[in-house]
Length: 94
Image 1 (tube, rainbow, N blue to C red):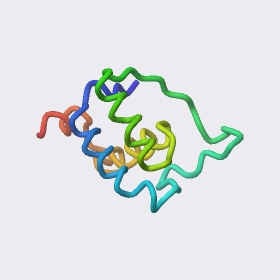
Image 2: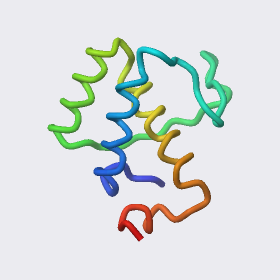
Image 3: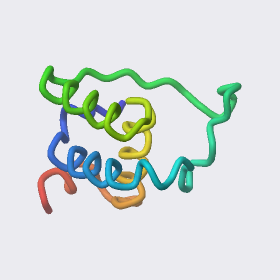
Image 4: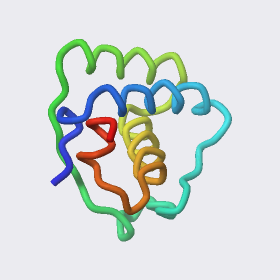
C-alpha cells in the first residue's frame, strides 16, 4: 500500500502543480478515466495531518474541484514522474 504520509514533501509539490492546472484540465493521464460506475477504479484510504488536510480543503475550494480529484491527479503525476523507479529512492533524493 502506498502511504502519502511517508512521502509528504514530494507529493505536496505535486499538489501545488495540480492546483495550478486544476481549472484547465479535468481529465486523467495514462490511468484512464474512472467513470461514474467505478468499474475502472479501486478505493485507497490514507491519513493526512490536520495542516495538510486544511491545505487540501483550501486548494479544493479555491480551484472548484473535489479533494479526491486533487489527490488522484497529484498521485498520477507523481507516479508518471517516477515511472518504474523506486518510491524510496525518489523520497530520499537518490
